[in-house]
Length: 379
Image 1 (tube, rainbow, N blue to C red):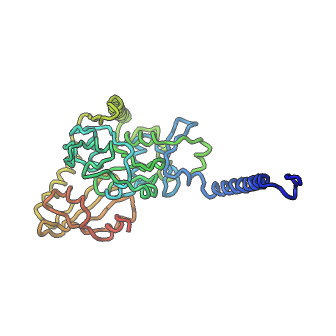
Image 2: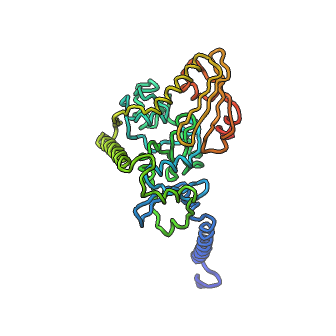
Image 3: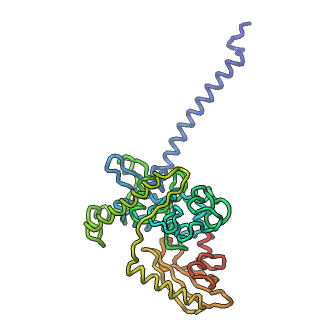
């Protein structure tokens, strides 16, 4: 009998037919579900949290807010900085540390020469006047480059699941001075935004090109963006146009010089970054004086002292010393201004060690309890 008889096909013929049939089914379902996925996930959902650059224009930058999936025009450096802070969410240091840092090289003064700018060290909690904060024999910059903890033992521990849940968000450090960080959705690392020009440059460096046609499919936020677009060609209100251009040019030169120093250094070296330290402004002097008065009351166990601290625009915190005994003070803490509306109106009572300066003691929240503390812990 013919081994290729139609009614008695061999195993190779059967396998070929099965392969073709399965391929046809998979092709159908692949196309079917890809269409459905495209319908369920519109472009604003797929691009939420991203920075978009208009490739058909002059590279204008937009941010797609994950909270409402609307786009915000980043405009000039001050515009971008204002929007970043307006849309930010408060976060405690313990949670922020779960997200790895995307770039440790930051322009600015480096008092201890450890390769980390002062403003960056203040954000991550290392000592700006001690190149080896934890005293383990390795400079802070070297430890950061190699993913070791500069404030303690061992390597830095990241939580990829936590970072993934917060990809695309902008955070403000609620326990420090409102330092802003952007979590890049592409690599789920956080980037310190620093000053307006720094934030602007970081946003653009992480941008994704997009056509005008696709960009128009994403709704513009009407409350903030249109105001910025309307005034983007006008000088910034608080400074004359010429003065503002000079300041931006100065910042741009500082950033460029710092970046050139880093490039010139050996790959395995931590390049120190430095720039002139400016004298404090009258407002900064006033804030420092208020902090010293409150700190004195805290260390002297003087109940009743109150401090209202305006960290940045839209972020303000209130402290009140309730009572002190045996080296500890009960301090009431609440936010009078905060981007995260759920935190407003909530408070917590914290036991802080008043044998330390208040700025140091207040970083330990283990002795806190109350509605605000529960929200900060994600409860």
